[in-house]
Length: 251
Image 1 (cartoon, one colour):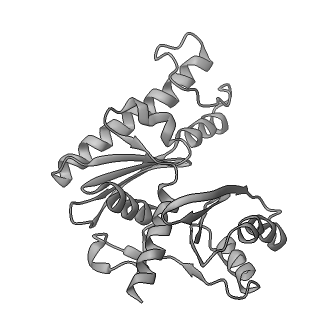
Image 2 (tube, one colour):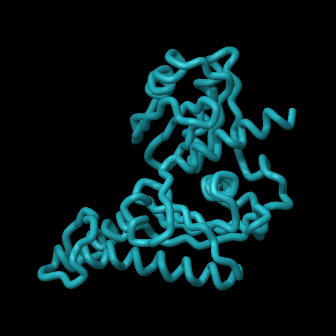
C-alpha cells in the first residue's frame, strides 16, 4: 500500500492506495502553528491502521516538505520518495525550464494521461486556476495560470473601500440585482468564461481536441458547466500513487 501526500500552501492532503484504489484519506490544514508533532499525529492515523509499504510526496512548500521528511526519518522501515520534476524522463517535458514547473501541475498531467488517455487537458481550480496540456504521446506541453475565484474575491475586498468579501456561490444569477449578487456573478461566471476561453485557445494551439479533466478543491463545482468533461478531486494523489508503482517496477 502507498501513502501519498500532497503538500500545498495551506493544507496537506493524504490518501492511502491499495492496488490503485483509495482506501483512506484526510486533510490537515496548517498555519504558523504547524509542528512536527501535529504532522506525526496526522500521519499516524494512516500508518497505524494500514500496512504502508512506501510513501511519496509532492510539495509547493519547501519548509513543510522538510518538516514532513523529518517526521519520516523517525519512522524506521518507512521509505519516503520526494517527487520532483527530475523524477520524470526529461524527454516528456516540453517546458522551457522544467525545474521551474510546479510538480503538482506535472503530476496532474501525468495522472490524466495514464488514467484517461491523451491528449488531455487538466484544469485545476483552487487558489489559482491552472491549465496543463499533455499530448497523445504523454508529453507535457505547457499551460496557463490565473487567479482562482477565492483569490479574486479577497483581492476585491483588500483593494476596494466599499466591496465586501463574498463567498463563491454555485450557479448564481448572471444579472446581479445588488452588489453582493454582482460579485457572485462575476466570480462564478467570470471564472467559467476564463476557463472556457483558455480551453479553446490551448486546444487550437496544441492542434488537438483533448479530454478535459477538472481537479482541485473547486473542480467539481465548475465541471458541470462543461459538457463531456470529468472531475477527479483525487487526481494529484492518484498521480503520486501511479508514479510510485512505476518507480517500483523499474527497479
